[in-house]
Length: 91
Image 1 (cartoon, rainbow, N blue to C red):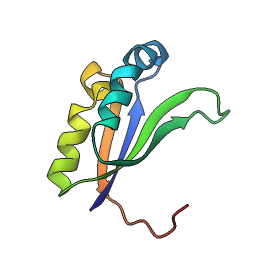
Image 2 (image 1 turned 180 degrees about the vertical axis):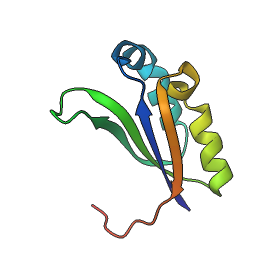
Image 3 (image 1 turned 120 degrees about the horizontal axis):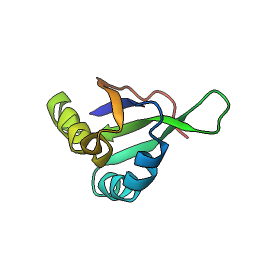
Image 4 (image 1 turned 135 degrees about the vertical axis):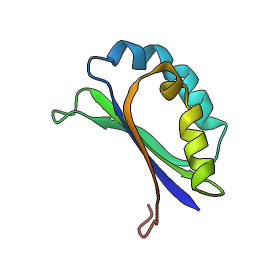
C-alpha cells in the first residue's frame, strides 16, 4: 500500500539539511520509495520540507520508515505526518 510522508523543516535549517542529505538519499534508495523530493519555498529557491511516497506493508511500517529517516533522526523536521495515499494519475 502507498503512503505519503509529508515533513516540514524547522526554520533556518538549510545547513542541517545539506549536511544530512547524503545519508537521507542513501536511506531512501535502500527502501521501496516510489517518489521523493523537497517541498520548496514560495519563490522556489529554498527547501522547506519533504514529500516521500513509499510502498509499505501498513501504516505502522510507513511511520517506522519516517522515524528512521536520517533527516528525522538529525532533527531537521518540525512536523511529520504519514497518510495512506491513493495514486490515481501516473507519469
